[in-house]
Length: 275
Length: 285
Image (cartoon, rainbow over all chains, first blue to last red; front, side, top):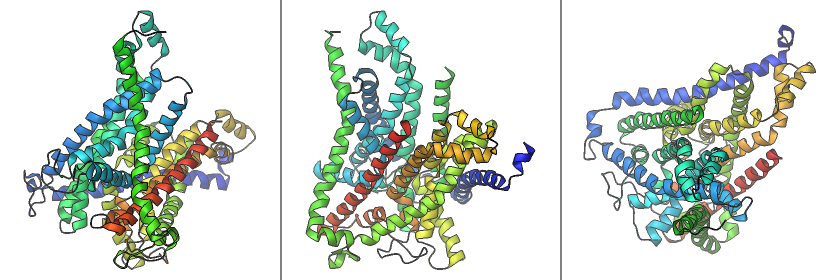
């Protein structure tokens, strides 16, 4: 072992891989540390005032809008995605053309840039369906955007449920639907949940798909009025250029949300593995 | 197996319909963008739109070649920075990383993927841009800064896909190389990495797809001048940045040209997706 390590090229390569891993960790550390150092001192109570004014640039309305948008999007995307996944894993005939097409389009959707979703949502919901700039329009756009995430993770989770359980259920006289609802779904729940958390992460972090659909109004919005989520709020503050302190303060809040969601997702996955 | 129950049959239809929403969504996205973009491109002229050097909406000049080149420069730059680091990091994680460190490192990569792009943009604007300005002069915004930032952003994608490709290579390859007297590093780089080539490439392509579609972070650090970049320090505007900066106030043909920009962007992304699919299929066989 000693002898092989004296080979210079090998040592350089080993060293390079360590360096790359270090750089990767450093990247995350730099982004996090910088956001915290710059952001935390700027977190003032006035940033959580109920009403947004041009003086306080409060982020509370944006925070509330973020919760509204996230909940409504999940309300649409989760049933849709899980139903689609049920069809793919439980009903679809093996090797059917339709399955291949659904997989292909889901993969395509996952790769479409968020700005394209923004333009599409603007054209379909704001222009064609006359929703104007509204949270609803943003919610519908985001639903399509996170659909492939929910679909794929739910399908994987359901495929991981052993066939023996299904056969047992059939053997006891249950129909396919009852088997899916009573046996497969509960068993796949942690996996589905981790997909949902991933989707939440994307919704919370999304900006480009929302500025042309939900708009950038700064107040607390109802579903039919324009409003900005926290990410859009940060973008608006940064691009206006007058509220750098306030924009700094949004970063740690956003990151805290994302880190919390990541921890949740890992716990859900852990539970899946430990079973 | 004949099913008499109504609910059983109804739900089957519901589930099938839900799965088909993906197909519908892709069809609608293509349809709407093409309906808006193609007539405008036609009016401007395909050649003048795709290869026109000047973008001056006020003078009715809509050439997006600078933006296409800008997107390509920035994406290639991101790949030059992100791919070596990402692939080497994947090698590290798949082979050299001690088990206990690996458990700590996985969340780092996941979190890196989870950081919102606006936060990356903020980091780029307030750290990388001043850094670049003090090192090289100029405004600090440009191809180089955008490439570095995008390189950081595609790391998690490249690492995740490349690592799973490397782990899928049979252990015997590595052991065989060791038995022939190769050092562990040599075994990894001359047998495992070539064996995982298509998977690793797929990860790279996925990362490139992310980079070309990224909007919010790039718009903050690229400078956004719609002119042909002549050095790595000069400001560029990408296709995505073109849409996001002007969509707010564009009208008529100008708006159509922006949708046309989106069509070109979508074409790039679909092409990249196609490459990804082909490579993945190759990796499986």
